[in-house]
Length: 391
Ligand SMILES: Cc1cc2nc3c(=O)[nH]c(=O)nc-3n(C[C@H](O)[C@H](O)[C@H](O)COP(=O)(O)OP(=O)(O)OC[C@H]3O[C@@H](n4cnc5c(N)ncnc54)[C@H](O)[C@@H]3O)c2cc1C
Image 1 (cartoon, rainbow, N blue to C red):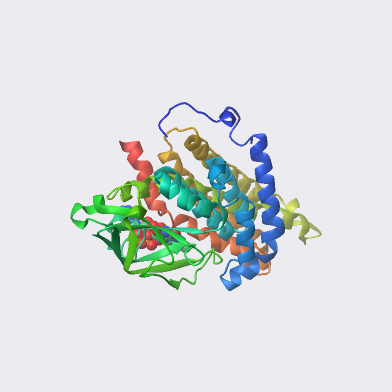
Image 2: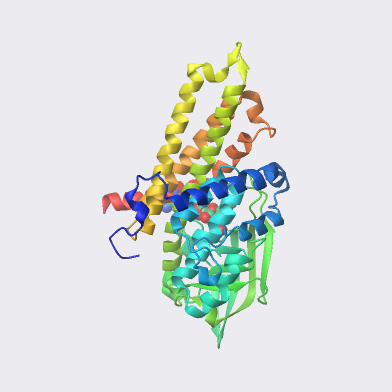
């Protein structure tokens, strides 16, 4: 990540013009989202559960190991492709998008960047083909102030014993592997925070209560309970005390993909609004004939395009090895704002039926709310942006 020279061939292209391989990849995911996920979106939202067979299909399609090298069973793709996948899925179901988002841009990414050869050999093939993963940083008392965590890890020979509780952990109900943060040296403050690879069947580990949420309801969000959980010392990721750096740098990348989830969601809402405006008749003509509605759609489309440009730029910069932290924060902050606004306006274009569960925009409006909260609230993104502005 240190070279300052863009290395991707597609870096020559305008931001939204995709390379041939990227276009084919995007088309495949759009089709999968529309044909396979689309029919179940409402049912999964109501049940608050993502269908198991769709998860399996996502593994079979290679969607859970996009950047994992082929030698480990992955697709050997780029971060930009992971962002394209999240965006395309979010237009149909933002829950499906966040499952793919956490697996690729957080979990796989952590292991690829920080794992040693033995950890990569043991875990990458599983992540690419069969095992869902979670990123467990937050706790009840430490959200924005993530490093104030109270989970503790104590060395015991070739093991660590971890005790604590994690909250809000995405994919936790389905996951088999958890990238979990605990402090192994509280006297050193955040420099004691360490990242552990915890398997679901490790003694003392338990998945706790599942949250009943406003949106992205088919994506599981659970508490994790660690009661003297025994984790082999060989499962420390990176070094003891380097967990804070691993978390910060991973979330910087993950934020670009949350931007993609939000711009994809907004595109989905816009597409539904356009289709409905062409078909709904009032005063003897389609409502799309009224300039008031046309102006709404024009503004929504411009905002979606602006968000997409920020997201694609952040992802291309990351793949090119250029600094991207400010761009990532801007992409997440802006895209989550416009997702909320565009979904809200889509509900209004649908009129009364937009307010019901019979049409998909009501769900997209609820789903949009999470963008300003997870992987760092909008305020935290603004703090990052302002730091760069003010030096
Ligand atoms: C659905 C969902 C999924 C999640 N998935 C995961 C996951 O997979 N892994 C994980 O580790 N965590 C996850 N989280 C946790 C998420 O990252 C936190 O909820 C988020 O970081 C905010 O922390 P908090 O909830 O403690 O809010 P708080 O930190 O208590 O914030 C409350 C309010 O105070 C504001 N605030 C706080 N500090 C400041 C400040 N310094 N300046 C200005 N304003 C401030 C915030 O912007 C916010 O508006 C998830 C959360 C949700 C809801």
